[in-house]
Length: 363
Image 1 (cartoon, rainbow, N blue to C red):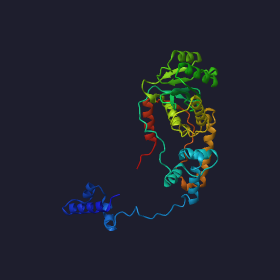
Image 2: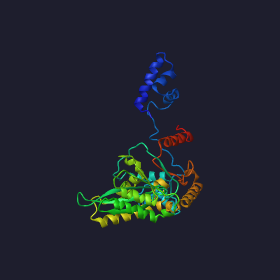
Image 3: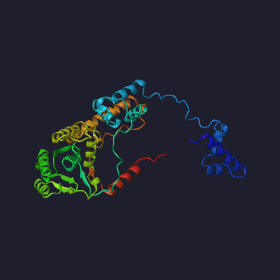
């Protein structure tokens, strides 16, 4: 959009060049505009009043949200259970209750109009890193990740130690413990209890357990227990935390939850209670963005396909009821069948190439 002063300046320069013998279309090409644009400026009021598009009064589309619908969206989004959720999680949650109010983008526009879309977290922007060895999971109990994280006490210099084991396919936390000291004995017992709880002894193909290069997770006692259980160990590259990205992301989610005490935990019991509450919320209430916004427990139990099919049917009905509000297909609620830990570089490049071929070019 060219301002009024720039329009007049361009028109004068083009007129001077044309009067000096230059061809009009060449002069316009050098100025960066089309001949038709110059003609439209001269024929109308483009050189007197400028561009009128920003001030133009446009009629409200017939399929736009009504004031009542906008108020309902705002009221639902501000309910206590949705107060800390983005539209991408609110809409699937409502869909599971058989309710469809509007699309995620409509929720976003309504919230933006009321100044409720500002980021409230303390997270920093992620940094990209090259990918190491690949592991692929197509079902639960095939690939686990684990790590240990520090939980600060209210006494400066004192810490509690949170151990977590995550099923990569379902994103379910299948094992966790909190202790007062970092010890390979705790890691050994956690692996044993988790394997028994998940029924690993009955599986023909034992899971891979991926962790970092910390001394605790690579201790002899831990390796001996993994060998006894038949669990195959896997490790990240030294000093590359992104190689264990699923668990690192999980710890980030935990420590940026509103319930996480910024001043630290009063004692071990408080830390364990917080961990128990977080794991229950994460497994049974948190709709995970990486698995089509179902809960990890639902996916771990194989319930996600039925839930996603119900969502697809609800969206299809909503589109049929109000087709003018949909410019394309409904949201993709297909089942994610494969999850990859640290995809190889060639795989990422091939996926990007496939998207560029199958998707139309931007105008």
